[in-house]
Picture 1 (tube, helix red, strand yellow):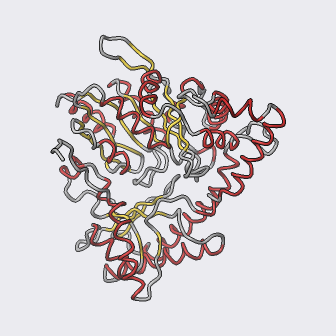
Picture 2: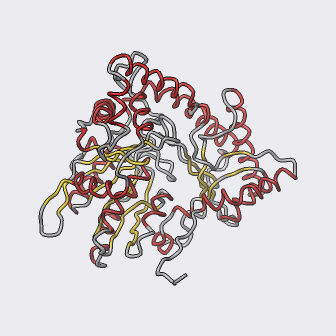
Picture 3: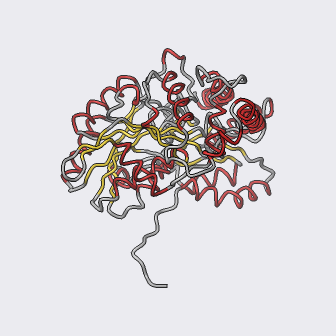
Length: 454
């Protein structure tokens, strides 16, 4: 074959660990060790049983057949559909999701995507189409899926911003935007996961969100809010910060996925924005319009089974629109809240006596806590996490690989004292789930104490 100008993007540490895990697991098994899952960010099988979902969807189809006629309803869905999907699905979602998060959502601004990852791809593709040098602003650390997609474009460069426990450093955020433009890049947007940050293990404070909005408004930069954990929130309802789409809809691009509240398999998501973009020639165009053009080149029609199934998810047992998805979410939050408490209480009990060595985040949402290990002779790199599996049967993910390249230039040790601990997944359910996560947390604490010589 002829040579091309394609380059190989680096493989993420999560994929490297997945590839290495079978061999490491065999080593652990040969030593009589059980495998403890604190690495994968998978939705728990206890909250992703498809049985009730499928039964409800089938009942909805039967209901449509009795009330409207199955053919009349389904024939348009299985024909050449609008790239935006069925209007009724978008109306239902806009009303329910908007009410849950105090946002006045317009159905005409909703575009279905293949999960929130599909939304990331759509946005990057849109801004890369010009052929110009493109800058993406993001957090240090940031979501590995975003890094993988943004790095595919050879004229793209990522400018990252360090975070504290409330969110990104806003002075650094403004400075990175200025630097990117001074370097000759078109700044596409600032990408973040403000609730249940992956892998940061934090949620942005209400005050920091306002500061971010001010910085981006002054710089005329879009904010891309990835919200996979919008409904996996452990705070009291009155304490939950509003999402950016509620605070600044004209400046925000919101990415929703049903993977965490519903089922991951169907890959249902939506991208929503009320922003406008100035295009070549100076005209201002609704961003939705540009995204629609991009979407139709990517996926002209959507899976009717997936969208209709999601529509049924938005209806109660009488097939009336739900007033809220929070009661549905609470069934899942209960499991993750228990898991989070098991992990955090074990860390406090077993490692809380040496705060100068160990620390961890208390996530207000999401699946992860970031564990900090300040031991002078230990680097939390790939070799260390592989050792934790082979010697102790404990699966974790090192945080260093979630840092963009520029962050590692600023600080070559970035993330090398941290591990991302996942409390979302185990193989068992109910009492077995609690026992497995307890055993995993205990095994991790023992491993860390042993490695530190305590």
